[in-house]
Image 1: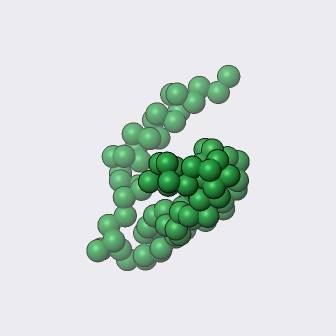
Image 2: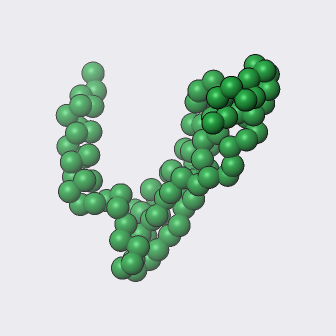
Image 3: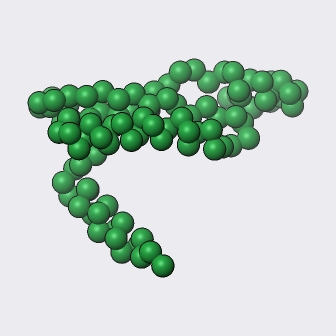
Length: 100
């Protein structure tokens, strides 16, 4: 069996020590901005569609980091209403806390 707890723990410590995922945006020699879509909550929880939305952007950001870019990869916000509002309307709870 793959000893992920040993191997991944080693690399997580190295990434924290080296600040691999903390770009210094003020001193970036090769800045690269990679905006990732905010995962829409369906009001029923996250689902496999969120994995599809993030995988490509995450791989691309990691590739650019390996190519020497100072990657800033925030999660963007593109409004919340659609899925949550539809779920609240379906449950007839538009004003009972689903959207607050």
